[in-house]
Image 1 (cartoon, rainbow, N blue to C red):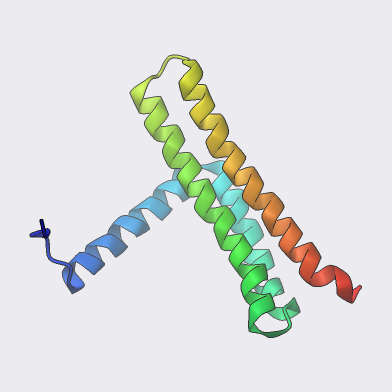
Image 2: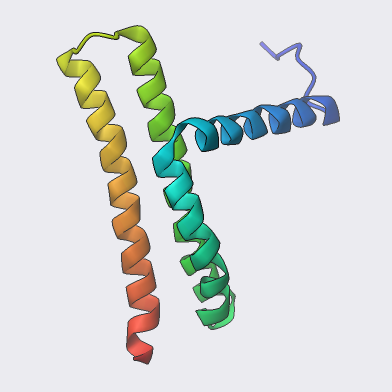
Length: 122
């Protein structure tokens, strides 16, 4: 059944506001996110400068966006788990560990992308 909710400019604007609230919350409450943003501020322009052509620039910069996205999702998982069960539970710990592992995998991906793009030039 089709949704009765509007999908026009008003809904897009609301989604933008919610996204900005999420970014603000990540910045305010997550030290790891802040650190990754600082690294992003350094490596984003470096990736644009070092990348030869659009594809290389997209790989270098895109890998950085993936890390930030994973960190936000990991933080969201942690918040929901903590809200659901404040005491330790094996499944809660597993969920948090898996979220952290996703961030780690994308950090390794970013390092590999940068190495594979830039190493042959050295």
